[in-house]
Image (cartoon, rainbow, N blue to C red; front, side):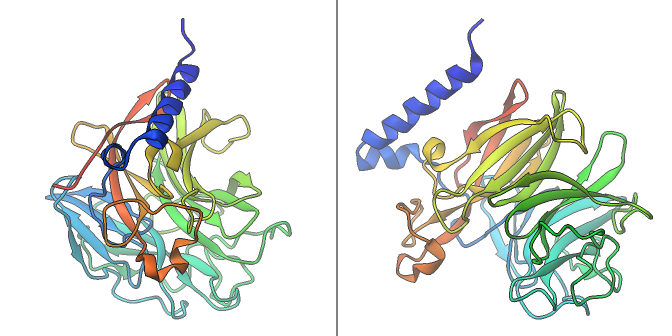
Length: 349
């Protein structure tokens, strides 16, 4: 029986070679196109009555909606009515949204005092509709280190790990297991990076009484934006790795047969610039289609008001002359022996 991993690697290497030697027209044809070519970083996408709703990093969580994954997408304003009393001024980063027991819940990371310029903690807001408005729940963070200048969080990350920086928590991601139990995954910010999980109550709005968060994965580099799904072969975790301002930012996958123990996990690269032609494909989220399969949504840098990816080794957030923006891409997802595969890139209608 042929080695499927080796065969897939050969296909990817051939595609990369063709891209590198192709002329401008054929190279542009090979590269996927955004379904929404505006700045829409760290997308979270849900299937809701009437279509899809997408949420992005930004002030009070800007959004977009569409009847189909390939659009047309329409942009809308922020859906979070206000920041909670324990927050300070600053943008809301990488959110996640889930429908739990008839309520739509928005998990968000917002700036707090006591952890420098970018230190953030995680709260939850709720709404009766996927397009809001979302109102913050409770008077304290859902997850926040004990050293932050906030009321004590339901998950204060105790006892404190002295090997981690005092930088807060970001990138919340909701997961419901096959038995109905639910968890919140999140990242401890800066490096070393860790992805942790904490058990939630059935309504998804609180941490379970007495629950302690568990470290799933640790990396000496940047590891962020966790998105978890369950397959017959095990739990599959997508994450972003690298510098988000550069084309080398990528999406990786890991698979474990045990939800809270990833010491024996296997994994690899899912999307990067070599295999896709995109600049910094990351921030991936998964939305379930009507047929039960998944669509992956992610962002990637486009430049100069075109649909073409940025190129080179620059830091794109520092190049206003290039007019770089993190556009929204979509791809239908398939599986080969428990490994995620792009079966088709979608293009804007």
